Length: 110
Image (tube, rainbow, N blue to C red; front, side, top):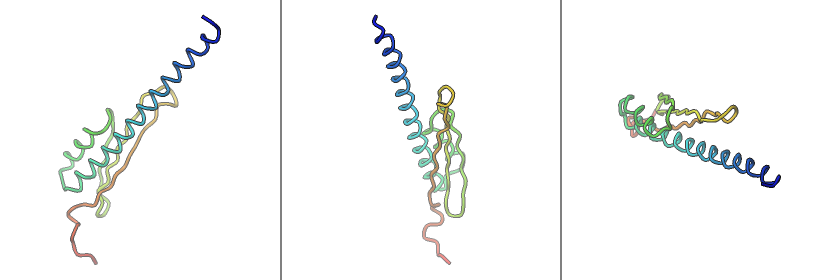
């Protein structure tokens, strides 16, 4: 084995592992966004809070935390999920979605 190969192979392995970690993090971020949107839609349809949480958790990455709340006419769902990784690569991904409550649609305004 040449000296160049002894240096290049570990660098390529590290690059491949970093790329794999980045793809996993991006995939989990997309799942957080999808989970927040699904939860917000369920909350807007006036489904019970347990059903909203289940809907969001089913779409979220493993270990995600889901919060549901209403602010005025909007239902807000926030999803946070930790990523796996050493040191600074261990991030917390998050997404938030809001949906207009269906019970307010068509009501007379002030």
